[in-house]
Image 1 (cartoon, helix red, strand yellow):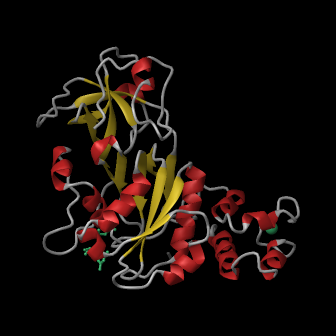
Image 2 (cartoon, rainbow, N blue to C red):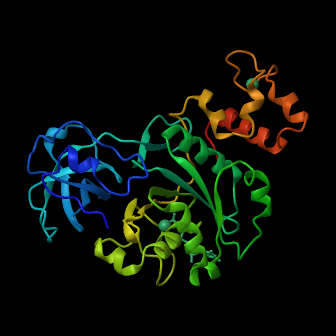
Image 3 (tube, protein in one colour):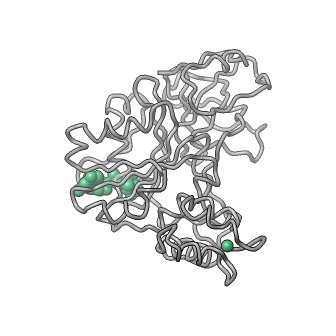
Length: 336
Ligand SMILES: Nc1nc2c(ncn2[C@@H]2O[C@H](COP(=O)(O)OP(=O)(O)OP(=O)(O)O)[C@@H](O)[C@H]2O)c(=O)[nH]1
Ligand SMILES: [Mg+2]
Ligand SMILES: [Zn+2]
C-alpha cells in the first residue's frame, strides 16, 4: 500500500510510485512544514477520516481554509495529532488542487451542486440487470457527468443471475466504453472480482448508481474485510436486512493498485451544472453525426443533422431518442 511520508515536499510527490492516473500534484510547498499528506477516506458532518501512513486519522478542516470543503478523494495536508486514536482531532491545513470533480445536483432544476468525489480517474456506473430494473436514462446521465467531470466511464452490470444483459449491451456494448457483467455466483467464486479488478488497476474508481444495484456488495468483494477494518471504516451489507450506504467511502485496493470509492445510491443524477452543449460528448456513437448540424445546434431542433444520419443507419435510433430525452428534460424536474 502507498505510504505518505511526513514532511512531504514536491520531490516526494513526484516520485510517488504507481502513478497511472493523473493524481494532483502541487508546486507549492506546504505552508506547514511538518504537515503529513494523506487522502480523505470519508466525511461525516465536518469530521473527516484521512489515511496517513496507513493510519486512519480523525481530522477536521482548519479555520484558515475558509469555505473550502474537503471531500472524499481529496489529497490533504494534516497537522496535529496523527495517532488516529479515539477522541483525537488533527487539522487539515491544505487541500491539493483536484484532477477531477464528480458533481451532481438532486434534480436538473436544482442549482445546488453536490460534489460527490474528488480526484477519481474512473466512474463505475453500476446498473443492476434486474431488481431494480435497469434504466438507460440513468446510465446516460452518469456518462454525461463522467465526461463533464474528467472521469472515464466503466459500465458495471450486476445481478446477471437475475436477468440477461443483452438488452443493455445492445445499447452500450458497442460504444467503446469498457463494461463488465457480474452475478452473485461470480462474486462468490471470485471470477467477477478478477474481471472487475482488471478494469480498476492503478486507478481511483468511484462507484455510482441507484440504491440497491450492488455497489457496496461489489466494493466489499473487491476489498477484503481485514483491509476494510484496517481503515476503521466498514460499509456493511451483510447481516439482517439491507444496509443502504449513507456516505461516500474510499478504500485502498490491495497491492497499491488503486482505490475504490463506494457512494450512496441516488434517485437521479441531476445535471444542472452541465452546459447542454456538452451533453453530446456522452453519446460518442452520435457525435460524428453532428458534423452537418447548423452552427450552435442544440441537437433537439428541426434542422439537426442527427435525424438524417440515424435514418441512414449510422446509429441506433434508441440512442438518439435518449439524447433528445436528456436534452429536453435537463431543464425540468426529472423522474429517474
Ligand atoms: N441476485 C443478486 N443480488 C445481488 C447481487 N449483488 C448484490 N445483490 C444484492 O442486492 C442488494 C443491494 O446490494 P447493495 O450492495 O447494498 O447495493 P448498493 O448499490 O450498495 O445500495 P445503496 O447503498 O443503497 O446505494 C443486497 O441484498 C445484495 O445482496 C448480484 O449479483 N445478484
Ligand atoms: Mg451501498
Ligand atoms: Zn444537431
